[in-house]
Length: 298
Ligand SMILES: Nc1ncnc2c1ncn2[C@@H]1O[C@H](COP(=O)(O)OP(=O)(O)OP(=O)(O)O)[C@@H](O)[C@H]1O
Ligand SMILES: [Mg+2]
Image 1 (cartoon, rainbow, N blue to C red):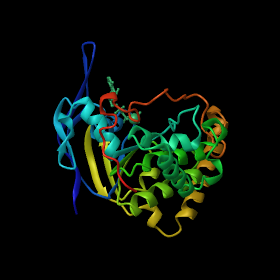
Image 2 (image 1 turned 60 degrees about the horizontal axis):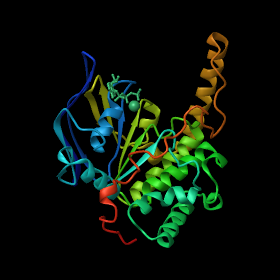
Image 3 (image 1 turned 90 degrees about the vertical axis):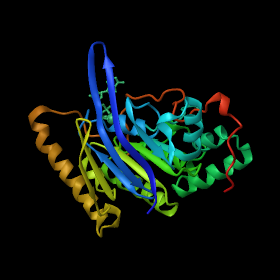
Image 4 (image 1 turned 90 degrees about the horizontal axis):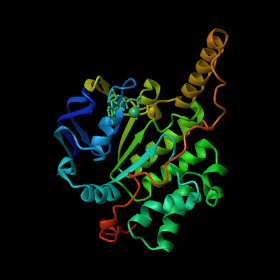
């Protein structure tokens, strides 16, 4: 096995006024190429902070992150932006699709940042949309698609530039159990077919069952690290998803009488609250790097 990510003595301390928050406390990790990892932990345990350091979106307070043997914790912002474009894909909880663009244009965006000619990038984006079963939604804008369809566009966008690592922070947080299963299966098939390393961040122990290694965080520390037989490899996984749906419904019904929670989400729908930012920094190019990145032939 070949290590792709190495984390050494990683610390991240946030300072807010006079207070200090130790978000990551001495994290040491090695991730092998092609692994499907889940970083599992309760809210505030440091999952997103860890993902941000792994993807080079934030600098550690101390310690180091190496990807492909390169010390990304020491790179400049421009080097990081170029590195991310070449090696890293992201899938977001709220999809972060560009609202004025069609599905095809959204998927082609990372290729545009790489300077690929329009004809070629549209062809590759269309191929990816067919792979996520959206051949008939290419001209639709995000508001003209269901939550599950939008997330499939998000998946197509994350994989289109053939990254070596894909990061996903609560990618199915806005989806129902059935859609979650389909979306996760799609992600896993793509990572396996292309030997891509997949890092999933979630608070949901059920979702962690899709990974083949589960790393548990608590108060910024690794408190568990174990191998797992991925749910997609288990026989009867669909039946398990149905059982989980039924159990959730039962739980909801028993709660409904007690403290009247709001309606459960409809299939494939996302809550209306979150609006994506105009351009997410994880997707945007660094101006000085434009045109400098080598094109990959597909
Ligand atoms: N920019 C920041 N400034 C100050 N404190 C921060 C910042 N970002 C995160 N924190 C703190 O660091 C800790 C870890 O936060 P983080 O966002 O990594 O948690 P998380 O595990 O992703 O939680 P959730 O499941 O709610 O997304 C929390 O206590 C949080 O309040
Ligand atoms: Mg988080």
